[in-house]
Amino acid sequence: MQISSIYDSNPERWKARIAGLLDFLREYGDRRITLRGCRLLSRLTPEQLAAPGVSLLVATVRGQNGRQLAGVSFVSGYGREACLVAVHPLYRGRHTGTALLSAQLQRLGRLECQVACDNPASLKMCFNSSLAAVDLISGPTGKPTLLLRSQPECSAAILPQEGELLCQNPS
Picture 1 (cartoon, rainbow, N blue to C red):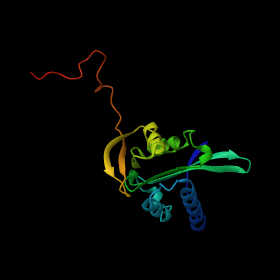
Picture 2 (picture 1 turned 135 degrees about the vertical axis):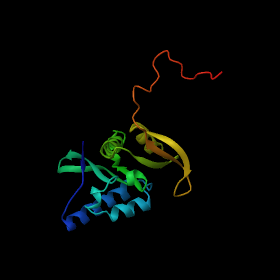
Picture 3 (picture 1 turned 30 degrees about the horizontal axis):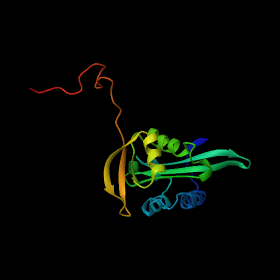
Picture 4 (picture 1 turned 180 degrees about the vertical axis):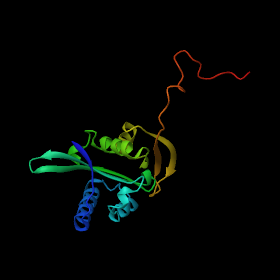
């Protein structure tokens, strides 16, 4: 599997690529991709990809007819505006989504997303990508939804050492 960024300066090819990715998201997003996220992706321009916090990645695999799309991930506003991931059913359970989300985190430096509590596969993908639940909110459809964020790297200097007290009595 290969993870790569999408970019095309030719406006006609760009529109065709985005349309193809939106079709993929609609078909394999299991009706869990937000309308807002799809709208942001549909309006995305190559110039916007240069903005901080915006990234469009695809996972492809080698097939009989060349490279085939296995997954798509789009992030806008470091995930506050949109964080979309969809994986073709043939490549689910193979950490394709985790690889896409981890690549987004590595590329952007930080990431945030919202996942409905009734979506265990997406939650597992986020946890496997080192995102942590920081809040329980009401999602766009009113469902209980976890807000997940990347955590800042811990420095070894502030981690407790073996045998060190974790809590100290103030008295």
